[in-house]
Image (cartoon, rainbow, N blue to C red; front, side):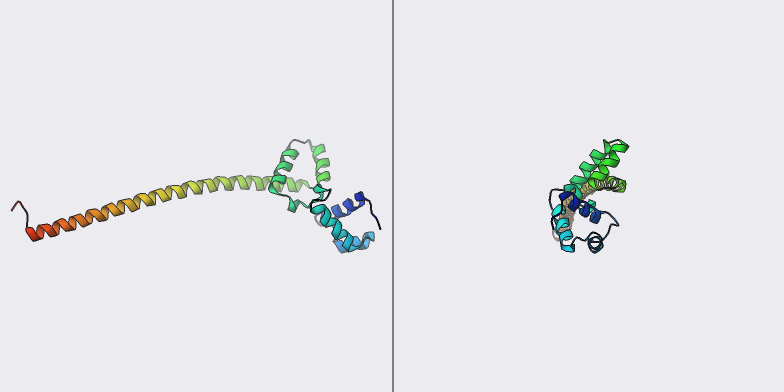
Length: 156
């Protein structure tokens, strides 16, 4: 049986809703075979003609960032319409904002750690150089004492 694209998209949207029906339940409810539902789901999630039907869990960081920028520029009425078009909820936007803030903070921490590691490496090199110089001076002092013990002090 042939189904209209709008019908297919509507079925996939139902499947992608958090807490939505399972494929088996939707199949029994609508009379569409399970395999057809799985095929439609795969088609629209993997670059089919309906990119917006992807589950929010499958969005890349870039997609989420662009969505946050777009959502920030919309009024509350337009935001609701936009969320419905994208198959999102307001909670997704809030969670993504928190994730972005967390990622920014983590980058700052990573930069700080990199700087501290660099400084630590520099200090270790300096310490190693000073250890070598100290060992050399110790060896010279020991040798001087031995020479003085063997040949005596020149002043005496």
